[in-house]
Length: 225
Image 1 (tube, rainbow, N blue to C red):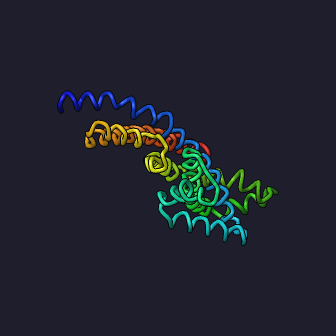
Image 2: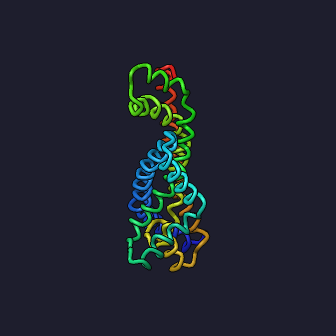
Image 3: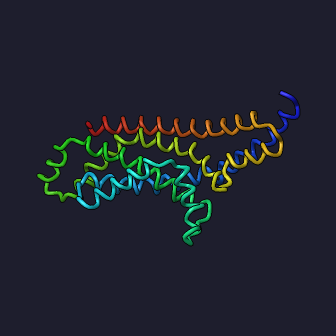
């Protein structure tokens, strides 16, 4: 590696990392938190088999899972202004990522809810609990423990997917890298560098996932689950 290229890589590292900490991570955290609310409500509606709401939930999941995330970003950011709805880049990214991830996580949570033994519901009813109390105190906690690993994988995937936000002018890590590449004409080294930073973030989240899984396993053993 030449001294010039090494200098570019070293100089660009904080310039790429800082938007990751200020934009990529907040975008991921906020969007995933909203997505979890959407996913939980959507999954519970399907689990409860509420006729009309279940059909709406299935339609939402069908549309979102059947269309590319990039297309959804373009529809919201570039398409909605055509009907008078202008959304700033960062809120648009949060909206699209949360709605998109909510659809996928809803299926994960729904499967986890259906994996809870029917006897748990029956035991709750025999104890005099209402349906909502059984869901909140018995079924949902068990389902969330089952869903934790795949939901963690979804979070890690979202960190990488945030690079698509550069297409709607969100100044996150990938867009900053593109600007540096345009100025320095060193695409190989710089794109590898930003890839390694994404890898760093994903590795940290993977470590946290493993810690969380271990604690859940210990809790389950203590509870005899």
